[in-house]
Length: 245
Image (cartoon, rainbow, N blue to C red; front, side, top):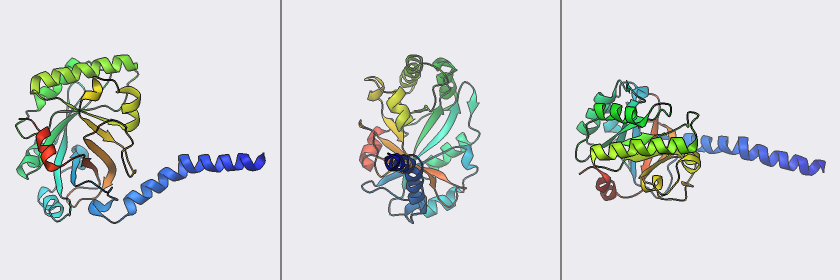
């Protein structure tokens, strides 16, 4: 019995503590594009940025990524958060993303304690989208103490208001577990999905997805120190088809 208990303990210790560390070590210590492990089978890459990346040296960044086997094609830029917060570098980053030839998108960081109407108003006041831009993104990462029913109701309200204003179906950003636990029903599953799932070889979400944020440790000259790397699940033609007309 003691031997069995030891085996069970060792198995649980490996699964919950060692395995995640080993996966992360593999992803950030494997020499490859952007300084991290790159999953097989994908060719369209992008990043997401905010004021946390500080002032980006766009000339240096573009010069580096153009030499990659799979150069960056799209950039998501943080625009707003909650009721009245504006990312201080949004306008500069959003303008430069287009200036340097990237397909660009803007996202809102959702605060569950604030009404959907107030948050949608904040995003709309800050973000003007043009043909060729990606649809608006709602970044949802916590419940804020709301019940699943309350959270889903308010999120659906934000999505509806934003779709009505911009004429494009918004994208939902969430981690794998958060999506599965809080944001899955027929209506929410109809929205394009940008899923965060780090240090794995493939997305384990069972439904359709469009973007995969697979690491937060990508290294790109001109961006200090690290940046999130994202994969588009499709071709460049399919990415372009997703943009606002």
